[in-house]
Length: 469
Image 1: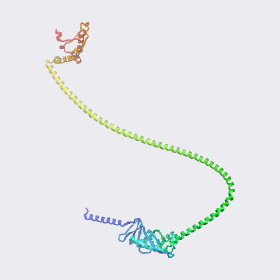
Image 2: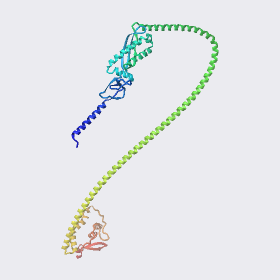
Image 3: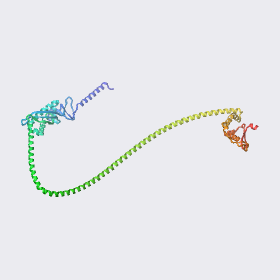
Image 4: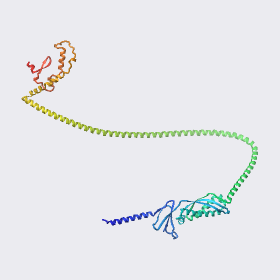
């Protein structure tokens, strides 16, 4: 296990190393495009073995060695200097005023940039302006002293070229370059320049008047000669003119005809071409519209099919889910109903079983009471239910409204009975006899209740009492 002191020592060393790396990175300086970075200190030596005063960089970046080197910037922003030169002596010993404006800036040429680093580094803008103004004043006076006023006033390009050449040469010595020169006006206190202007204007006016007089003279002489030549040659010209007019008219007519023919042909070609182009344009437009319509139709059909498919899938899924839910509900409901029916039937069966058991036990008791004779026991049961059976037969006809029945009786029939008696007898016969009721139940009427007899082709039941009578 490491000691805490070792961990703290390692962390301190890492922190010191990181701080050193960050500090070294901060010494890597980048130069903006509108400035010159001047690195001074221990720079190195020139080719001749002398120490370099500074290293200038325009653009890019450079590593500034800590302790041994430092850096500063020179601004490349143009400097405007107003130079109002007064009483400058020309070559003609005439003093003139030359107001002008110069625009200068620090040069980026390698040698000139080195001069700027040596002479302008650390100076304020106003100090640089004053230094430049002194140089410009001296060079302007020198140039004006070597030129006549006429040259300065008329040949302005020559004057500006001389100013630019001389001034820029001197400015480069301190690291500046001349960007622009603008001389606004030149004047003098003696009025020499104004006189020169008046002289030039008067000379121009006199030259113009002389030229006008000479032209008028030549015009009069020429006019006379022209009239003479006119009178001589008019006659000759008339005849030739008439002939020429006729020939010219013929040529004009032929030319006009040819022109009209060419125009008609050109119009025909142009009309044909226009119609062809129009037809092609219509054809292309129709084709484009047809293609667009086909694309639109295809898109609409695809969209419709997609919508239908999506809706069909959704409907199908919904129906499947509904069917599954309904089937599940039906299954549950059927299972519940089946369970309920099963429970009900099971309960009924159990109840019926109990009833039958009780009936069987009761019937066994009845048979036991009848001395073991089942027929006698059955007779006892029938005797017990006879009143209820007779009530059922009577109930079948008790609700018939005899007072609402109208029977037309024509007297006695062949058997000696009236129609009314036959009606009542037939109605009573419609009630099933006890013998038929027992036959339908699969049993035989007990002999105690009578037996069948044949009377007049019909059935008659005699009881034991009837037989006894």
